[in-house]
Image 1 (cartoon, one colour):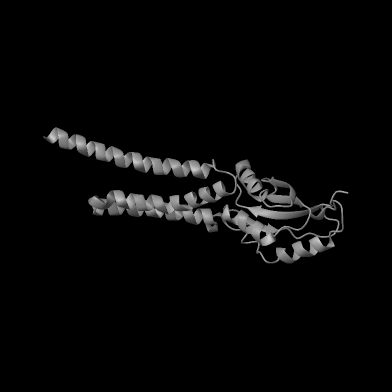
Image 2: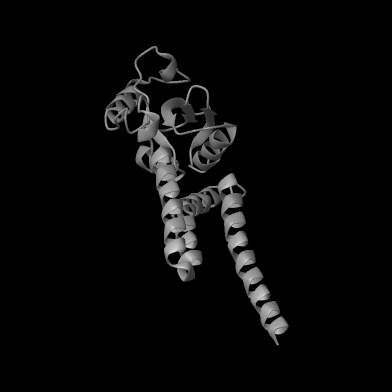
Length: 206
């Protein structure tokens, strides 16, 4: 006789497209004991079908490591979020409801003004760093390259960290990984080009 199945539902945030949903689904499917994982971008929800309740803390940490917000959806008897698949859901409902109050709606991104979001703050910091690098480069021409590399690192480091995390959780060819490779490659190419131009100038000067 096959084991009865339960469903747990979560609210997600900071997902932009179907690719984001695919990354979350790929990472969560690595957990043992899960029968199915369904992620919806339009409703910002994830439904996990499992035999026994998964380690909620580990599952939420894994999703947050990818850069997305997650909080268990509060469920009630007979609701769509607590569909009965084979056995009594009272224990599951109590577990989900109890955990649902540990995460505020603001943390999950719901209702927050766009300029208060993490992405907006990071974008503003990147823009400020570029402006600062431009001003500093004009004031100290010899340090212009280093100033712009530092400004690049402010935006590249979070992207690279997320790319590495996604690669660990089953998505090695993400857009973040491509952006990281492109940025690092551009820096290496520029450095080699500058060195080659310097050698050419020295040779011509002779």
